[in-house]
Amino acid sequence: MSAVVTVGAWEAHYAAGRGFRPVMSNEQHTFERHVGPAAAAGLTALDIGCGTGEFAHYLTTCGYDVLGVDCAATAISRATNRYSDTANLSFRCWDAENEQWDDLPQFSVITTRLSYAFIKDKTEFLKRVRTHLAPGGHFHVMTPRREKLPPERRNTGINETEVTDLCAGWAHVKRHELDAQHTSYTLTHQQES
Image (cartoon, rainbow, N blue to C red):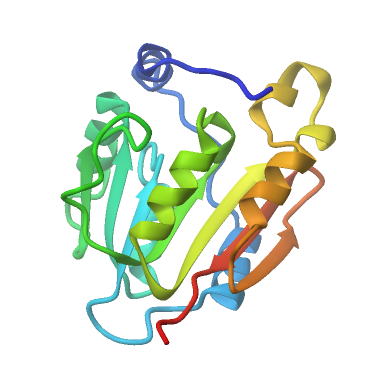
């Protein structure tokens, strides 16, 4: 079972000045190979669980207009301060699991980096992602695999059943082993007929 982490625990994590591993070059190359840069001006990306904003910022370098969201206000404050001069990048304190998605538009790309394992109701979450992903758009997930983690960290990764559920029902699935513990999945939404 994945770890259940409260908003208060995330707040404490970020308030202590902590973050997560930096965005690695192999993550960037995998995203560029499987998703690619924005093909036209105005394409949008939603980075769910953006933390302090590193991957959201990277997405702007690919040409996307990016909204980074996280449930921890401290993380959003740090991201906003760090990237205040970055064009086409905004941040919002928002809990993708517990708040409404009704006011969100469809996005060309939706990403979740190192946070998918912490989603409690993955089935409902994936329904919301599909609803807010433009036809032909991509859902890009970077996550640890549970069986590849040391025992004390296994609850921060996803298991094979969760991988199967994540990858079901997409037009295309691309999987890339980033390192000994982390895998990226690029899931492409159906095109409109």
